[in-house]
Image (cartoon, rainbow, N blue to C red):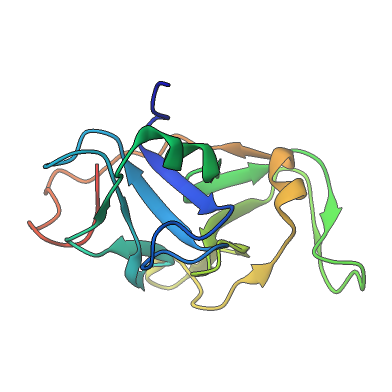
Length: 156
């Protein structure tokens, strides 16, 4: 069995004693000492940061219980959709959104806003169902020249 690519996943069932079912994890398929799962240690700018030490997969079968998730980041809305059955908010075509997740892998959409300082990211997002994520298209965003500091909790 081949391993899935590095990225964000939701656990479909508990994996060992330290990773519960229904959790957001980062799967790193070429870690040291081997492929492993990392739980969030916190969030910054609506993006998960990861514990430095993960749980090494005892065997490749654990990967069968990982549901892939779209990466965190900036997206544009392709087709309108409501946030929920109550239709509290409608996300409109071409709208800029930031995708993030809770620790339980629940998708959150944040609405960036223009401020006097430039584009601002709110600290509160709107929960949406995973099914609506197919109505988003990822944007290519340039990365700053300065590299993030070592140990900032971002995995490649």
